[in-house]
Amino acid sequence: MKNYYRAKLLKERESYKKVKEDSEKIGEKFLSLPVVKNAKSIMFYYPHKNEVDTLPIIQNLIGKKIILLPVVKGKDLYPVSIKDLSNLKDGYAGIKEPVGEPFNPKLIDIVVVPAVAFDKHGYRLGYGKGYYDRFLPKTDALKIGFAYDFQILDKIHSEQHDIPVDIIITPTKIIKKEER
Image (cartoon, rainbow, N blue to C red; front, side, top):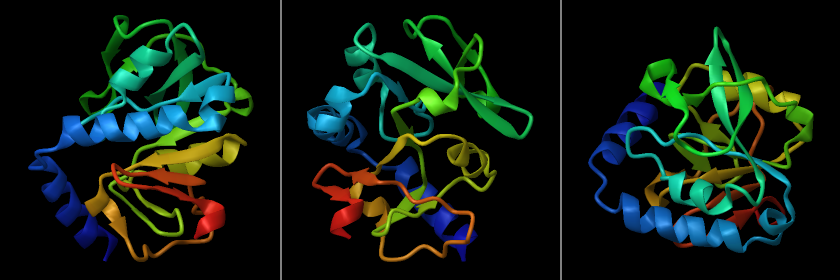
């Protein structure tokens, strides 16, 4: 069932026409959160294949916060801090990655988690490789998911090791864990 939804939603996202407009709305909501204003370090994902675009948010926060991007090595993902977006290389699946030393996951305040979909309880449907499933237990950071409205499902089959995000931000709403 996960593979069916993954394929269906990826196909829908591939042809989605409001990426820029919706990404801007999500970015505005994200930047308005008090937890973001108070955070010292934030890990983002580098957008790929019509994911919510994190680059304008990253540009806005560079120099104000410690900004991290993930690097995939083998079966693991680790955060590396960046000073700008110019020194990135093609990494896993052609996704841009920084070069540098790993940053301690315990020192990250917020992780913005990519997904194919989220359910209303914060569980995510990922890409099926488990990178974030293995990474998230290593950090105590607040977990935030960015999604287009069509990526919010009623329920995603979750397993014992799955870690839900604390906040989901879409173009039209902010869904907080305590309000679910």
